[in-house]
Length: 270
Image (cartoon, rainbow, N blue to C red; front, side):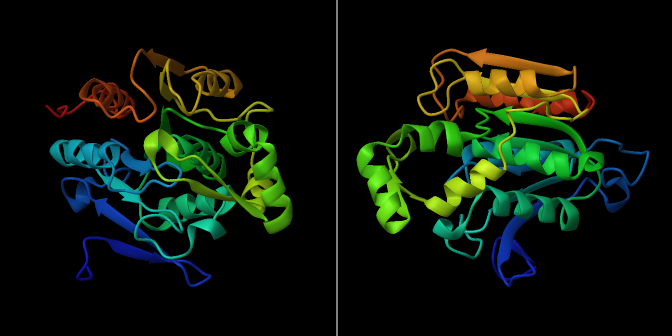
């Protein structure tokens, strides 16, 4: 390991994806490698303009360490400590990053836990590698948000800026600074929409969303549940929780979903 707190995965275009990986209790017990521990690993996929140091990611890492369960968290291109510029990224590229981590970093079958945009990326990664995904957990999942929650809400000034310069800014989430949006990001997002047709996944899915989410309406998770072809889908709605869903009681819901999809064995995190 390098003299940093993370490792890096080299991408064919020269960019690097930063990640942190915790293996199972022993090499022999790596998920999918031995009948002694058949639990899947857990892979966290962060949100838009987020990174792998957030509350949910580190909570899940601590949970998995306590359970002796493999875990991976990472940063997409242009996020956190990965290389690249955020403004050059898009949904397709970030989904490719997730698949690259799934292919080259994670071991065996995985439970993909996607926060906000990460819920959309998790669906795309699962569609690309269905045999590697044991389950999905969406926390305030935001499928198709580039089209439905950004493009369709742009005001005249933002549309004019896009037409003239190819970029504009939108207000940040929950008090964060404004976020740059490019025309190429919106166009790429349109090529990766998932809610307009059945989503052919067979794995179990657990979705958690706040009724009063100011950024991503809970109807996005409901529509995702309806579009998924698997019959094993459960949506939990939470009052007065906001978008981040990082309160202790929210983290407990996420924890319970991960443990359930892991086979319901092993200790929870106090």
